[in-house]
Length: 371
Image (cartoon, rainbow, N blue to C red; front, side, top):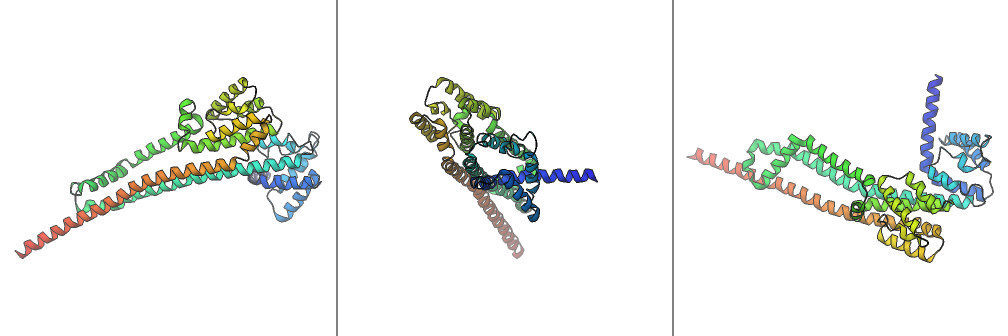
C-alpha cells in the first residue's frame, strides 16, 4: 500500500513539473513582481503553498518542495537557481544563476519570461505551419482509399478497365496500386517522411546550406536559428563569454547546428571586432545576418546587439516562418488540388463513359427485341 502511495506521489510530482514548465512564464512574471515589491522569496513560496492547498492547485507540491530546499544547509543562501534545480529547464537555470544574488533579479526574470514567450510563439507558428500540409495529405490519402475500395469496384462490375478510356484506365491503375500495394506504398511514403525528418537535425555541410534557402528546409532553419540567437542572448546576458557560450551550446546541439557553431567559433577566433561576421554561416536568414554584422560593427556591446536582434527580432522571424509556410502550403495545395481534381474528373468521366455504354447496350437489346 505504501509502495502504491509513493508511486502516486511520484506521478503527481512529474505532472506538476510538466505543468510548471508549461506555465513558467507566468510564474517568473509574478515572482518578478513580488520581488520588485520587496517580498521575500520564502514568503512568496509559503503563500503560494497555502493557497494551493485551499484551491487544489497541483503545483502546491512544488512550492512545498522549494520551501524545504530553501531550509537545507546547502541551499546556497536560498538562491533561486538552486531552489528550482531539477524543476526548471537547464537554460532557465543558467540565466537565473547570473542574477539571483543581485538587485537585478526582478528585471532578469522579466527578461527571461519575455524571451520564453517569444520562443513559444515561434513554436506555435511552426506547429501551425506543419498542420496544414498534414491535413491536406490526410485528405488526399482518404480520397484515394475511398476511390479504390468504393468507386472503382462499382465500375469493374459494369465493364472491364479497357473500356473505361484513357483517364478511366489511369483511375484503375491508381486503385490497383492502393488495393494491391497500398502497404508497400505507405511504407515507402513513411520512409521518405522519416528520412526527411531525420535530415532536418542531422544533415549538414555546404550543400545543406543551399537547401536551407528553400522551402521546406527554410522553415526549420529560420525556427532553429531564432531559438539559437535567443539562447546566445540569454547566456551572454547571464555573464557568459561569447566563446564559452558557443562551447556550451555546442554540447546541447544536433549535428546540423553543431556544424554551424563550429564555423562560428572559427570565425570568432579570427575576428578582433565586429563578431557578427562570424555568424554569417548560412544559419541565419541573410537579412538577419546582415543586420547582425552591421550592428556589431557599430556597437562594442555585442550582447546587447544579439539581445536586440535575437529576442526582439523573434516577431520578425515568426513572420518569415509564416510567410515561408504559406508559400509551401500554397504550392502543396495547388499540387494536391490538381491531383485530386484530375481524379474526380476522371471518376466523373469514367462514370459517364460507362453510363453511355450501358445505355447503348440497352438500346441495342431493345432494338433486337422489336425485331
